[in-house]
Length: 385
Image (cartoon, rainbow, N blue to C red; front, side, top):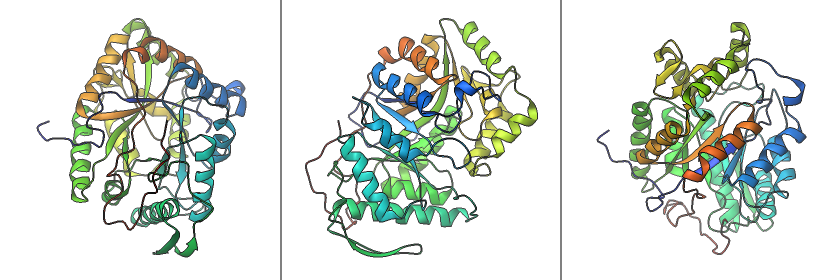
């Protein structure tokens, strides 16, 4: 790991520690099963989110799926006014909502949250669609450019492959008037990496070996530098932390104890991005693991046998899990999105054992987050909490 990683928040010595709201039927105490009490519901998902707010997590991912669960934006809008300190990170599927209307919706929620809004940009196919990878990322690029014009300029004046717009932007300025909400992005193809390097603030990765993570970070850092930019790095990962390593490993085995092979395959293949390059990398990682599913000390891949995306967990006692997180921070990772099963219980356990040991922050807005060549003029005052 000789290469130098450059990040946006170079002066920041803490990390944004986030949790996960399972609004897409992603909660259970046995993978492969879905008891009624864990099915996606307003009651369960909002309880988890509000507990994360109470416990001091700095952000929370609200995912998106067409096949299962609740609508992301409706959920985020409803729960946002109930929160006190936590930021929200709703996932947005590019193209799902007409960009000018999306800009207005984002601005509205940003005012409800008084600037505690961040956005996860998703580029997967929409239901019933089969666009090639480059086209999907081009659509995301155009959506982001339109959003930034809507938030920071007097008009949207845009011509692209997917959108041709000329509109005034009087009604849709967000609370955060220093460029709008921060953009989090995950993608592994060359066109996806280029999109993040040019337009987004935080590059989200799924768990892999440290060596492979560092390769991704080095490549992204170099791509961003070509645009005279820097990005922060984030890691989406599961966690099982207990007082002893043996207890943590026992819970991991229990979690998988009722999973049938065919059910796991069905779960992995039902997502719209099930055939993506990122998912294939998770499969490769499982193939490198030992007989118990560990690909590195305390990095367990078994959980990916019943998930289509993020497919590994930190498993161990508090010292082991904290040491691994600190190692990631030394590499340059500044944002973590954790989750565990069941989410409410694991949220509390992580807050008990690990959260007090980490200096937690919200990722900052920085003056250079918009490329100088963009014809956008930040308006000034609004700041994220």
